[in-house]
Image 1 (cartoon, each protein chain N blue to C red):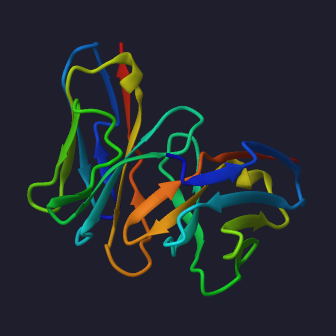
Image 2 (cartoon, one colour):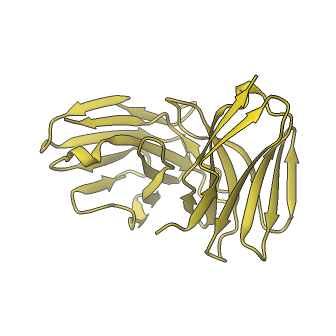
Length: 114
Length: 110
């Protein structure tokens, strides 16, 4: 694809529900990142994948958050038992995984937990 | 943990002026320092980036200055324009371990 695609663009859910956020990276990019951005803040690192494996998941805030990338391309961020504090924009980025580490970002998914 | 500190939080500059945003990092293993520009409702987009083997990089009106010993780097926007009004983020890292600063909201007044 032309760029990183994230779906849905907006997600409204109720407290306690389960949500899945999808990221389609640029074709051929081996590295994929998830960030969370609250209003007026910089992106907060959550997890990054190199291929199918999570190379660093130290940013996941707790065990309600989980991410997968089973075939090394599309990734899904999963949030269980959502809380109002989870409301934020969730950004995905991909990079070639080599060289200059330039990250290409999607437009994000705005999650609102009511 | 805040590995990258960015200042100021917000900045107002007159059209034609110079905008300066600063970042400091802690991890001496970091070897890649990009700046991103973000408009409302959009993801961050790469503006300019530098490696620690040079002290300055210029692309058009945008310049990065890098001080390895001080572990600091800054973005200079010359001849600032209203269209430059956005939020700017520095990032630092390497080996795909990248961390963002908290951002600077730049407003360029006509």
